[in-house]
Length: 451
Image (cartoon, rainbow, N blue to C red; front, side, top):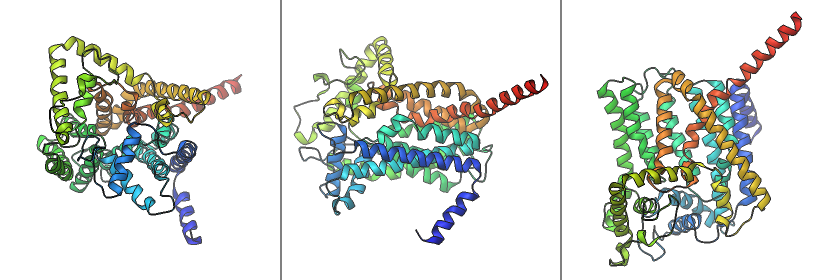
């Protein structure tokens, strides 16, 4: 960087107020922690698991071989968004001296994305609640252990969180309506289209992103936005999302001869959570293996349809068991928050983190998670009271993301996107700690002086 460039950066830093510099400091700290973690654990993933398959699919795209299964047939089993992201990062790496280190480079990019997500959520908090909440939000997310762990593995959560945070910035940070009193009626068409594009990209990583569409409409109506305006706002975002998703859906119709909007793994996920003998946890079972009597190139779609029908049948014909399974799924999803630490060890098949260290890190991560959840619940009421419609959107969408995994099988990985939403009401509690302590110290000093 030139001397003029360095002076410009320093001038912009000095122009920030104390809260802005604090947010920037936590973002830099979060980036540093993530880079150190990636350097410590980065490697090409071994074994047979999701990171291995994501990397294979991404390299297939980068090499120009298309999005194909191991057997060479067109596939849509995994949502294409994350493998496409790996492909975008991998293509220049494959044409460089680092061509044998695609996975570590992708993970370093994820560290940057994760730090950018911290900044984005702090900006949202600043706009919705205030500057002290922005600092607290940045602090909470910068040091959240499992978010750090996720940057060092080839899993889709880091990319998904970054896209969701970008959607929130686009929808909730409104310069011409800083109080949010007229939100979402004050949203411009440009912002709505931008949100639709980002939402579609997020849905191509994880389809639960589409929950934002009904939540936006519901919150707009509850916020007493005129019905026509609420429908227009939601309609523009929805139409844009459909337009961006359309090329992938058309590709699936042409290559796989079926209507597959995003992916074909929903049937498996529904079936694994409900088959006879299901415990709410992932398991390999013949109940969900599909129909072997179809042509090999049609197995994926046929299996998705069959497993979806079976899962609906089991849920409808035994609703009491469905309720019990939902409880078990909830337990598996929310009893811990260190799944990416386990993934970094190739799910126990090729450990690289010392067992004692992993145990300590896992305990710290779980404790951090549970304390943050308690703070989020404690601060939710004040958050929605002070933040209005925009805060309601954050809370309702966060709850939707938190409950969505209960439709499938339990896995602590599935709750990771909800972390972003928990951080904001938790920050509302934390931002009140310094003033309370200062008031207590002042009161104590007054009493001492009087004595």
